[in-house]
Image (cartoon, one colour):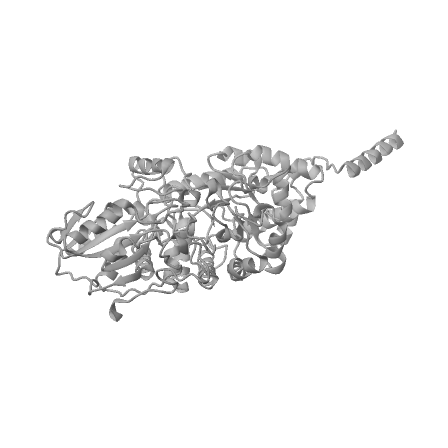
Length: 630
């Protein structure tokens, strides 16, 4: 009998070897004093011990990042999921205040602790210009404005404030900074880029990482940074992206160009030891980055990055052929932002391992990185956030930094006939609904994915965001341009009109024009001209005999040749955020001179786009006037 049983086991072993199958592991009982629960032991020893209890399915579950709308806390408990994220428009059902976020995230974390292994989760969010999804938080200028400011010290300070406000909400992972070098401003993500050249992008991205992770990942008020999107998203070409645009498109650039321009910011970023890096939706010469083992190996082996690599939102679906999850994992991605079908993910990837499509060693490598990060962040010892940091959200001191960021980001493009600075003795006309629209001044990735507007019609379904925010009173804490000017001068010296047909006694008009909020592919545009309504506002103000000071709110340079002759002064204000009004008013009245310099070439016409080294444009990169020199 024993001999027969031995022969059977031997045959079974051979069968498993030749078929590539791995038998299902039985769950082992976990002692209360398991080594991985002992904070005094080295991290590697704790990981090894935890591994000894993990089944294949439990390892794969750690590689799953699931959107909060798709996985309940009980799903986290039952499946042992590794990470939860809130996408652009997702979050607590009770509201978006920091305390709502704190309670919501802790609920998921408590659920993770109730799982068989008790492994805490990573909770991720896109806090790309401050913690803009939390009502009352500080919203900073988008990256394009910070690129014009070009102040690494300020950038690090902004990263520090963002980390504190994100941590206060119970979130421990920020999908930021974006270090794309945008070469074609038709791209709807241009405002997420610091500039069109790596010499500006690289130091600012590095500084922001230092701010987010200051003091070490284990600090209560630090968060894991996520450098994105690796890599070449700024190199994608028009016509290769979604709906014939540029977002998620393909680049035909040579390897040398990709290295010199687009890899450079990652070289500097990796030196700061970022916790994570996110893979790009885009491709290089027809090969999607979510399956591009060549360039992911370069990130690992050449740049020396040993942290966690995460996919973008269902990025594996960019790939063709069969076993697309396996393609991404075998290319070197450790965690997959699924974001919803976690059951099928666990089943498919586990079966891929049993079938030999993914090696068990590759799974172990990925899961080790995930667990290492969780141990380094101290989540096993301190998994839950408390309310001690809530008072740090949206403080006067943080708003002061935001105000500094606004005024440093402003670029003075034109100033004729002493149009600026303004005098408090003189009445002014303020023209345009954008002057009183905080949503417009913040742009995309604000409260909801596509942002919102109080007065402007947004593109298609993005307008639903505005209606929801109005209905739920979830507005950004801040001060608009109109409010700031009124506070400074008093209502009796302000003449406001939507269209510029009423300038009252004013001899100078501040006309606020530009873009309305958009995000990613919804902002792809082959026409960057000023709208007819904004052109009319400028011409109306001019026809009243006033000097015209145009303040442009936009996520990229716009074609302004039609209005430029009618303007005595032009200010590029980008997407300034919470302290838009005070920061802009500081500069208009000469409290602080303009110091911002263009980090993108300002085109004269659409023929100047995309940017080339020979492009001269209307205003060159590095251009920016000061009032004192005028």
